[in-house]
Length: 206
Image (tube, rainbow, N blue to C red; front, side, top):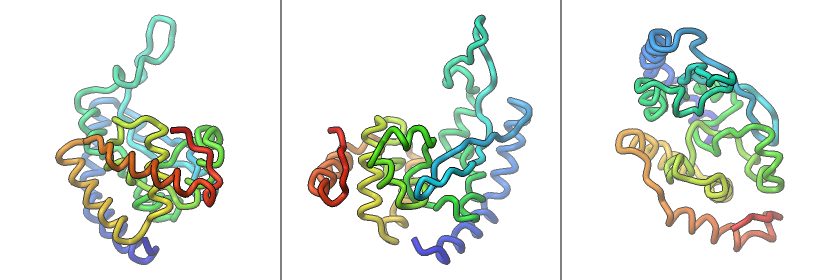
């Protein structure tokens, strides 16, 4: 997506979503207390490391040995809803504004995860990471890491303005209707990768 067009959308989006962000912050303050947000280190375009902000949706409950409980057990019904509606991701709008992220692209992963992917991680990093992407409208939490990476690589090789607009519209539909595994898109992505392995210089596990 062209940067000027993206900036127009993001400025409009921040103006529209400012109230939901404030309401989300109040809900977190009332249910979890402070801090309201936290930072995470992520790998961006060409491997550049940057920080993203997210609203906090988990408490710090630990077991008898002092180990944090699993993520699902540290969420409340309210914060689970915030995550399903992706309201916890809204602070990343400012990362898009600063060009560290894009509206659409592969979701930002940790530097360690990107390094473990080898050539797949390098090729995936040819574009800015996005707030939403092809994997997020094709199953998201129902996908394995390999399936997400395959979908991300397909996106990088086939991205266009029209595809980005389609992903943005479908993201809204997924938030409203819920996630659905799209096996057809996974199969298409893997077939595309197999056809283009020589040019991509990738070793992708099936």
